[in-house]
Length: 143
Image 1: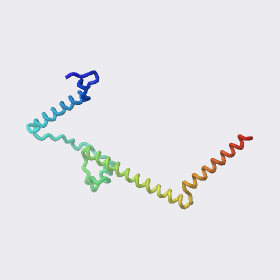
Image 2: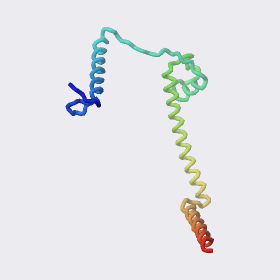
Image 3: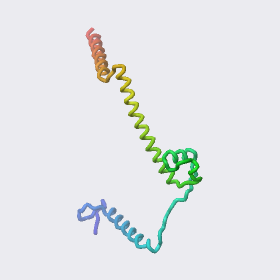
Image 4: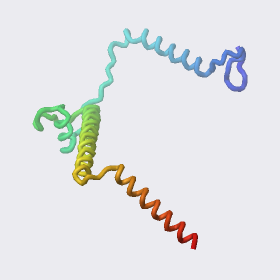
């Protein structure tokens, strides 16, 4: 089994040797771990509840629905719980901002409609101004 300088198989199959070797090694480790697990027993790696939540963290936990009242929140919680609550709060805040943006768009459209303004009238006025400036510039150039 020979390879050329680019790490490809010499037969021209186009398969990268490093990737196939990595796959073989990872498969071997998976097989070893699967066969060793019955003798090892069940191994659970859990992070202990080490995070002491601040008042802001407690408000996030309440707002996201993790707990019903401030008294229900334990003095220490797992970091994963606060991370999940922060992510959920971030998504809720984004949805609120999207909603407020849509409401603001409709408010601007309604206020422009009351003044009888539209983009078409703005464009026509702007183009008329440009034509007028171009005509004045042409007259100044002709003199």
